Each structure stands twice: as C-alpha cells, then as structure tokens.
Amino acid sequence: MSLRQLLFPLAFLLGVLSVAATKSDTPVDTALTETMSTMHDAMHDVQLTGKPDIDFARLMIPHHQGAIDMAKVELLFGTDARLRRLAQEIIVTQESEIQLMQKILRESNE
Image (cartoon, rainbow, N blue to C red; front, side, top):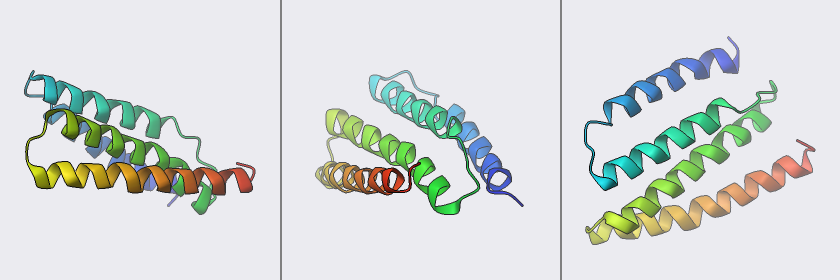
C-alpha cells in the first residue's frame, strides 16, 4: 500500500471532522474552522515523492503551521491560563520544527 493510499482515508476523516466542527458561528469557531481548512488544503496540495522522509517533512510542515495558527487563535480568544501557555509552547516548538524540516528539504534538494 502506498503512502498516498494510507493518507487519503486520514485526510477524508479529517475533512469530515472539520465539517462536523463547524456547528457554531462564533468568531473563535469561525477562526478555528478557517485554520483547519487552510491546513487541510495545504496538506492535500503536497506533491508526494515516494520518499518517506521527504513526504513526511512536506506533509508535517503544513500540519505544524495549522497547529501554530490554531494556537494563535487560542491566544486571541482563550482564557484558560494552562491552554494559553500550551498555545505559546506550540508556537515556539512547532516553528522551530518547521525550520528544521525546511532545512532538511533544502539539503535534500527537495
């Protein structure tokens, strides 16, 4: 089974979950839904190569960016100090992980 065959059911499930998550029209829910939609679109647009390391990095970059964007929404709207701190940590760690994956892709000429 190819990586694409493994990932499409997951992408479908995530799409279903994102539709299910659009039950509210509050500003926070609208913002979260937009971040998920952007992330799913970016992940879907990734050109898979059949090279596990390259495909992993290419898919994880938009996934991490989606987490960063969702964390920023938490910082704008959230009130729980623990979740706001977690959001800050997500932003810092996943930004550095994106930079590492981008470096690896550049070094791999990908």
